[in-house]
Length: 395
View 1 (spheres, rainbow, N blue to C red):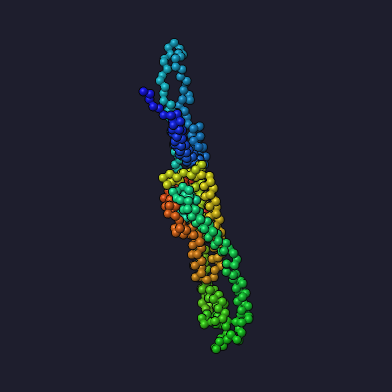
View 2: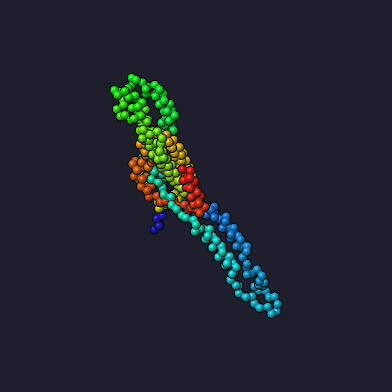
């Protein structure tokens, strides 16, 4: 009885399916190996850029100056050859002492290259902000609607911050120059301030009532408000004309400007550290995330992140300049505090949007992302210290 066999068409289709599965498995494993090799290559390049120049020079000097015990020793005869009739047999090969010492020197120097005691390894976490959406969009298990909504939130964040920036930079938004207000005050005093029609029942002129801070005025309230702001800003009494040493308005203005500058400096420093950590990641064909750790970035995603960092930096610098101008021209003490808080709120719009409107899948994915590691060399720490000292002296 003949043994039943599969038809040739079924065998060929089964072989094709098995071949496709093996090919997909091989490509997946090859992609993982390629990503690991890129990570290793990036780490080696980073170490070479930081310390290889000086340490390898020390290694070359050590290798040149190191004496070798086998330099002056005679060359032993080859195996199987006799020099003389009474030549002894070739001794057993001695261990290469010089070679071992050279290897030890090489290992010690390379260990110094990779581990400098003055260097410090820090972590750069991903901020819970709308600016972090481009890092995880397309990598998390989120629907198309959630991804599009995250992109929309990012665009809303850019529109709101840029809108506030443009409004604050316009000349119509800023308060008028104090010299113009002084000219208006002089015109008011020469025209209606001493007019007899504006005398009260006690024959008190309008300018006297304004200077005394009369709260019952129904005319010239603008001039009375301006004078009140000037007195409170300079710390003047009603009958005083010379400002004292302590001027609360000047001190509060300096403190508000300093506080706003520190807020923008924190934002810029966060942008710089995050961009540097992202720049050190290897660039592959696909972005890989393993165990909530960003392993590599694709070229397209890296370009998008670079654009967002540049846009974020431009908005922060523009808000810094416009905010300083706005605070410096504010003459009311109460408005100084409110303006400083408002500027800080503009800078935190991205965090408000992230906390209130981010889809939960993207929200949790950003929170679970592990911080990126970055190495701070001794030279860089000194530069940062000098930078902070310069900013302190500048302000």
